[in-house]
Image (cartoon, rainbow, N blue to C red; front, side):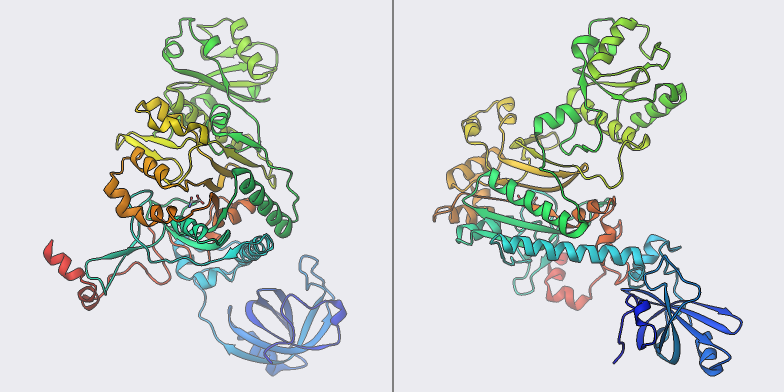
Amino acid sequence: MYRTHNCGELRISHVGETVTLAGWVQIGRDFGGLTFIDLRDRYGITQLVFNMDENPELAEQARKLGREFVIQAIGVVRERSNKNPNRATGDIEIEVTRLTILNGSKTPPFTIEDESDGGDDLRMKYRYLDLRRKPLQKKIIFRSQLAIESRKYLAENGFLEIETPYLIKSTPEGARDFVVPSRMNPGQFYALPQSPQTFKQILMVAGMDKYFQIVRCFRDEDLRADRQPEFTQIDCEMAFVHQEDILNTFEGLTKALFKKTLGIELDDFPRMSYDEAMKLYGSDKPDLRFGMVFSELNDLAKGHGFGVFDEAELVVGICLKGQADNMSNKDFKKLTEWLKRPQIGAKGLVYVKFQGDGSIKSSVGKFYSDEQLKTWGDRMGAEAGDVLFILSGEAEKTRNQLSSLRLELGNRYGLIKEGDFKPLWVVDFPLLEWDEESGRYHAMHHPFTSPKKEDIPKMESSDKKVLGAIRADAYDLVLNGSEIGGGSIRIHDRALQERNFKLLGFTDEEAEAQFGFLMGAFEYGAPPHGGIAFGFDRLAAVMNGSASIRDFIAFPKNNQGRDMMIDAPAPISEEQKEELAIKTIEKLN
Ligand code: ASP
């Protein structure tokens, strides 16, 4: 037997027992006649003690142990004179009688402590060492619990877990595909799925009724901190449902996950239409952990000789409570520079300070009387001590910019309470989204999303405005300003699906070549259906108040899409290229 107990298990009640432990040497310390070793495994740390006077040979052996050696120790549990209240096993230690080295270790390239001294790439290269660190272990364990609880909830609610293929066909819609050459079909390629979307819909046509899968998806996009080229979704689809049924089922899932993994009971989730979210927060994923709702000022601010506002499509502002007397001209200058960076692209910032002493100070004081500025403050609920931040310009852009400013101020002024969770359903998304670059409409969610019934006639219009106003039965679950999930009721009728492809600029031939199988299936009794997918990595991260999903993935890729441990991607041999017909293609080109 390698061990009778693990390293997080022994308590005062075990005193006197002979036990066997196995694990890694965290650290060793010599105090004259005594040598202490902290022995670590997934479950915790237990102190081993060796006495030079009683067993010099063994103590000498212990002194030679290096960090990360794998050892087995047999000994007697005894009460510690010097207890450590910060450790679950801190009341006891093991007086070792036999020590076996199971494996040695080189000195690790960084410290295996809660706070490591290793850089990102180094820790990724030695991911197995990084994963030995407690904070990372906790995250991976949390993810495992989250997956297990998801399965439990969905199984209890009648969902079937069904796998869909990873080798599928490339389609130009959506993000870029990762492709895989086919040896047996020279010159032809599979694509890795960006999501199992069409397969799960086909499963509904096949009568499976409720499907889920915790599934890997692949998107060849530029990477950011919260993006990975391969990521995991809790992917679901249900037949004979309306939007309401889906929202209820997955609100239930989210609540169950919070309860089971964090012990938190969430209230019913509020709902907001996409239009409202954009108007009030300038974002389709508003962070509701703090206020600072947008107020539009066109009627109050225009027509007073301030050209910037007069020419703007939208004048809109937010109110920051209680900071007027703390903010200097320099602060506003810095914020203005921050807003003018290309990432945000604002032209400038107007502020109004309602100072503690009742006076008003504003960057546009020349153009507006105090009385006029007060009417702005009244609209925003400002009191003495508050500051208004106002942006103007083209409506959509200005809302975006103010949304960034709102988040920045929320962070800077500590308006976000740690451990607070504010979920939100955003509903009634537009069906289509105009793409300047290609000069045509794209599907805002994906091309299988159903327009709202009452908006179907609008699909016949050739007016850009009318098309842009078509609403879809599409919804997102937002948590603390992150999009956690998204889905829609689907089109299940061939004619409507064809119509939608036309709107998206597909010719009949293109639609048939790419999605003929799905439209064909719709001709054999497709039930009304809809679904949703949760970003699993992101859900795990947001539930832990973490901005990055990387630590919640056992083997993530770096910002260049590289796996630093196995060193992928990598070239392939000439023989492989030959076999995959890549050589021939190179020659033909
Ligand atoms: N397939 C969609 C996505 O990956 C989710 C859905 O519509 O169910 O975003």
